[in-house]
Length: 102
View 1 (cartoon, rainbow, N blue to C red):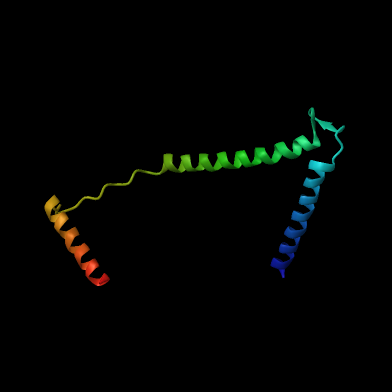
View 2 (view 1 turned 90 degrees about the horizontal axis):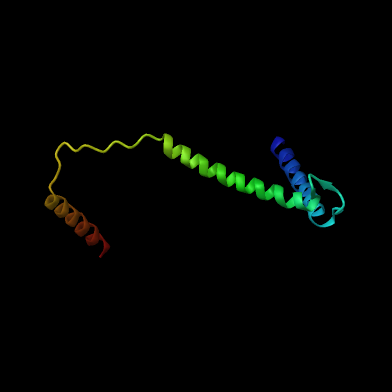
């Protein structure tokens, strides 16, 4: 029952917000100003600012993750193969995989 109530609340709040946003963009009086901007201006500026800041937060988070992740340790082979042996093993594996395709 709790999920249904929360879902209904989210639905109602989103519709109310859509109505208020429509009013702020198209029906708000032009003579009301706050910090030298009309309601319509604020209705455009605030969402754009939020979107830009969210994008920059994601970019900063990626940069932080890249900066704080330790570098990977290269794998050390006990018996390294020569280039020719690696090519031969690759050819054998390709031949066996193509044999099943036919």
